[in-house]
Length: 500
Image (tube, rainbow, N blue to C red; front, side):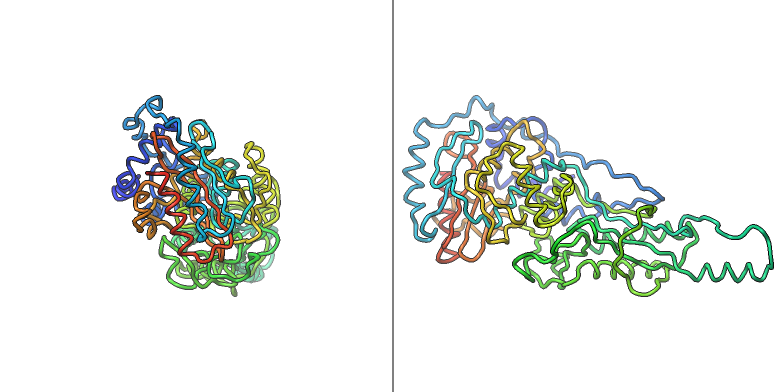
């Protein structure tokens, strides 16, 4: 259920843009993830879906979260009433051309502006030139994940056991014999702890609250089987290849593992839905297993020694499971907050779906193959990661606008979270503190866009309602920019001109 504050933020602050956008693309039915902003919805709705309890031996997978009500259809003008001025392309060249020549954007920036309703490129400058996208690559990550997995897919973290004692089987000798010896055998058997395994499924949003619920379900299932002492193991074999991102240890991303708690953050920022850089653990999986073992002890179970990494047996019986929120919500949170950990999780989930290794290399192949299958212009694209932290990533501004246009396609409603997850200029996510200068203020509340920032690299890609009421998709990429602040102001000015 959407909170009133969420509607005030997204529909209230940018209602004109949202209404016209809905008419421009003739959206059919409700948007899959509603018009919520993920960072506020995440904080307000923790535990209502992703942390559901599933007691019993084989909990079923939860039903998809309900979609938001389709309220915009009543407000939007008919698409037939929207018309772009005939001289719009020429007007954009006259307006954007000089701004794109700003030295603040480096020597050769790239730009693409597309009319979403028609697919017509209204303005392009080096739009087919592959450049470093930084975090705007997350738009490609989002489209690939939603296409491959579907918006309702959830990522599970499970606890399993292959120990006969946990299944309640009686392995005693029924042939009789000395009564004392039989009691001794039972005692020795009881002293041997039951082995359970915490199996990571790749959920980068797993936190202590959901681990607590998982421990509660696990403890209940074990008590029902008469088990009171366990040996805790943890399995991270779902992922392969290097754990460290090529940039090395960095406050912007944890080692990429299939199991983590609070994204491996070592400070209180794990409790903050806005996240941001923070010191990270070198062993997020081991730390998560330690937390899980502590929570089991709080629930009266004894543990035998510290948790150890071990692959779960193939015939393991599931004791408990917790699911992430739907991929639609994960995509929104990733885009709004520019969450690198979620991005790397989503591309690996895409690789698993495609039957490829869940590694940096396997994810690159899977995402590019998925986008190619969608007949998107992937020529020259090189997607070395899902987050955009890799400076060797390459993407074109033309591909970014094509991805945004595809997300607005009324025939692809499963992709709508790509648009609803984009930060709102001046109001939310990574755009909260931008569009304050006089030459960019017109874009505040009107523009939704993904930011990208690396040293010398600045980018911006999103949507805005332009002249004539047409929804425009835009992408601007800049390399060798002299400074991030001046480059961001130049990008804000460029995009704000589209809302004039």
